Image (tube, rainbow, N blue to C red; front, side, top):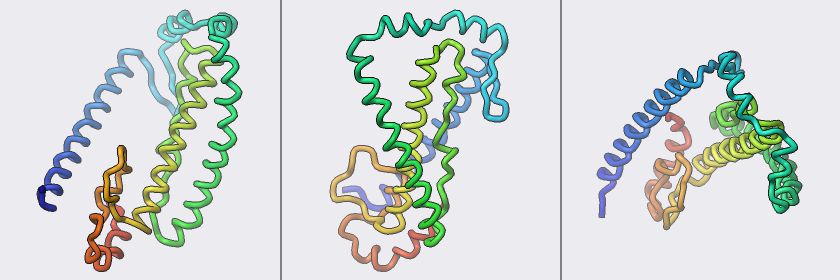
Length: 199
């Protein structure tokens, strides 16, 4: 059975590898910006004129897109888009929740804009329906990431105890949680963990 020190060393190596991976993603993203000739100005994606023209030629017309869509896809669209109501409600309530409660408990606020990136509608090769789909998916997935971070910080403040069995994809704060059954750490270090918001 690995010791606490061994786990901390492994965790440090994983974090270093994660930083290296993020740097590599940033480098690859920069390469793609150069390859596809776009820049981001004031949050807007701007393609070079000739690239934009070539990409527009790849766009499928709306009527052709609808004609090719399977009937099941067309009939399921209202169910899919109906989810915008609970998503918007989640967005409103999770934002209000953190702005009220996090200020009371001195938990750092989660910046919503760090999680919601809606930019695929700038792609010239997408038709209007595809752009709407991409906005919807970008919003929904970004919102879930944002909500997960808010709830993760809440759990870190109120109940920073690991589960007896590891979950499939735990949020990033779990690594600092107390081991399941470690009553001494809970009693002695709870106030310390509640104040530790360093990345």
